[in-house]
Every structure is written in C-alpha cells, then in structure tokens.
Length: 490
Image 1: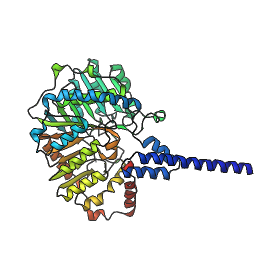
Image 2: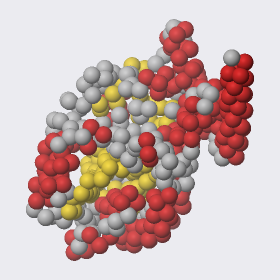
Image 3: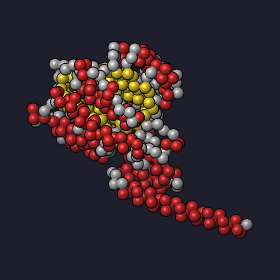
Image 4: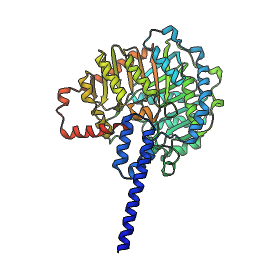
C-alpha cells in the first residue's frame, strides 16, 4: 500500500510539473505573439483557469493557422491576382486626383494600399430587401446564364425557395454552364448531408466544402476559421453580395425564438463584376489548387457600363491578408464622419479602437446611431454586446433594438455620402477570423436607398434609454460583465 501511495504521489507531482512547464511554454507563446493586450490577457485567463483543457483550447483556437497548403497558394497567387484585377479595372478607374477633397478619397487610398483593390465607376446597384424577391431574382439570373455561375455562401439551408435555386443550378449545368458552388463546412453542414450534393454531382456541378473540420484536421488548420462571404457571379453581367445567406427565412431556424432573419442583398452590374468573379476564382484556387483563369467568360461578352456611374470598391478580408486591414478601414470610416453615422449589425462586440472611434465621433458632434436586433441567436454575444451599452449611451450614442426579427444587415452609412456594406459584423470574429467581403460605395442612388431602409429599421425599433437601462436586474448585469470580460475571444 505504501508503494502504491508513493507511486500515485509521484504521478501527481509529475503531472503538476508537466502542467506547469506546459503553461509556462504556452504563456510565453501567447506573450510573444504581441496581439492586442485584451486578447492575450483573455487567453492567459483561460489557460490558467482550466488545467490542461485551457492549453488544448488555445492550441486549437488560439492562433491564426490557415494551413500550409492554403498559405503557400495564397502567397503564390497574390501578385497575379491583383495584377489581373487591376488590368480588368483599368478602363473604369476612379482617379483620386479628381476627388481629392472628397470624404471617400482617404478610404479609397487606404483600401488600395492595403488590398490593391481598385475603385471602379460605371456600375448599377439594386438594393434588394425581400428574401423571396432576392431568391426569385437569383433564380431568374441563373436561368439566363450562358457561361459561368459561381456561388459562395456561409450557409445554404435546405428547404423553401432555396431548393428552387438548386434546381435552377442543375438546369444551368445541364445546358452546359460551368456551375461552381463553395460552401462553408460548418455553416452548410446540413446541406452536405442532404440529397443535393449527389444531385449536383450527377448534373456536373462542382461543389466544394470550404475549410472542412474534423478531429484529424485539428493539426492542419485552425478549426473555427469560417468562409463567411456571400457572393455570386453570373457570366460577366450580374453579381450579388450582401448579408443574406442562401436561406428562406420562412423555414430557416424557426425554433430559435428570434423571428425571421432580416437581410439585404445588392444586385451588381457593371465593371465591378469581373472583380467579383476574380475573388471567387481566388477562393476556389486557394481551397482546391485548381486555377479557373482559363475558364473565364469570353472578352466579347464584357460587362456593360452604366451611366448611373455608381462608384464601387470591393474589399476582401480574411486570415490570408494582413489581419488588421478591414478593422482599420472600418475605424477610419467612423473617424471620417462629420455629421452622421448609422450602423446596423446583428453582432456588436467592438474592440477598444472601434469603441473609442464611436465615442469620439459622438463627442465631436456626430450623430451616431447603432441599430441592433432586440433578440439574438447567440446568447453569449448578446450579453457581451449589452456590456457596451452603458458607456456608449453616456457618450450620447443612440442605440436602437429592432423588434421585427433578427436584423442581420451589416452596414455603415457615413454622412449620407458613402457606405460600407457586405458581410462584416462589428465583432472580432469578422475582423480577424472570417473570410469576408465588403463594398465601399459612393456617388450612387444606392446611398439614399440604404438611408431610407435604415430609417425604416429605426421606425420598427425601441430606443434604449440610459435611465431605464440602468434599472435592469443584477443577474443581467453580472452576465453582461462576465461575457464583456471574455469578449476578445467571442
């Protein structure tokens, strides 16, 4: 018995020693990564609070590791990719000299400097706000396709009118159109288990599972990186992006208790379409290694140029770019505001820089309005979000809680002159972990349409009053404070 006690004591001391060594080594790694202090401190808290489990969680989720093959492909593709895009855009470029005093010029220059993405004129933008209308328009455009249809979405939910989109794709493939679909592994997991992948394969549609997850993949890339883009390119004539996944809100997440999802999509036409197609080709090649450059639409079917002349600049973001770029663009847009800012997002968990920009804008006399859903599908994010309300309200920021469903639109409108709209939420996941896409738009009738839409959101919202907000219960306050503490990891 004494020998057994000695053995168990030895094993216990060995485990304690190993745990201490591992914690020291991982802590050293966290510190030397030199990320924002709040993120590093949050990870250190997890590592020290959860014996062994904290270290495992950090090794799986703590570092941006895209995978060796993807990193190598991205590095090799970047030069040719930006060169090809700028060649397509050359006839339609917006020169900064012509708009030197414009509010948008510094943002355009920042975006081009960081992403090498040009701003182009001659575009026509259509704001679509009805989910069924969006799906019906996509189906109509797929039915007219003659060469290519590329789709990329975070979620494709089976059921309702999305099944009609799938049928339209199958019909297009049968008549010889090159149809390619990229779907996120986690977001579209139910789709990959449905009957549609088999039907797609039989019809000749190329379907890939982007950023696949699984126990054996833990060692090859970080498991919570997500392809969050919503993009469509059809021939050289039409494209789509916005906040809506391929879902029919009448059947999607009906038991979540948040109401129907409220989204927008933008139907794109003009010189922005070849840029949209190029981004989709980039994502395909990065995931599969297959280049689509030689499958492009013939030059004699180039995109039309419209007299409307909406100025558009596409901003792709994700782990293969400098991971602070989209964050810098958003913060710079907020600091550029002189009169008004209206922001809509379903997930609002800002870092210190974004929060400071909003408070500073309000202090400068800018009217800052943030529109959020009253009910959120993520309980933790909802508590973390509300942890920011008090100090923003004190600074004069107006916060509205939308009552008619889960408001999923992501947009920033600056002085009614320019907007940033796309797939990026105002949270750290969108800034640093997700593959996203945003449009910078100005000189466009779209701006007024978006403004009127945001006013309609406000009309169906409840404005948060500071006095009433401070009367909420102690349990609510504690949960807000708890998740506020760990918001760098959400």
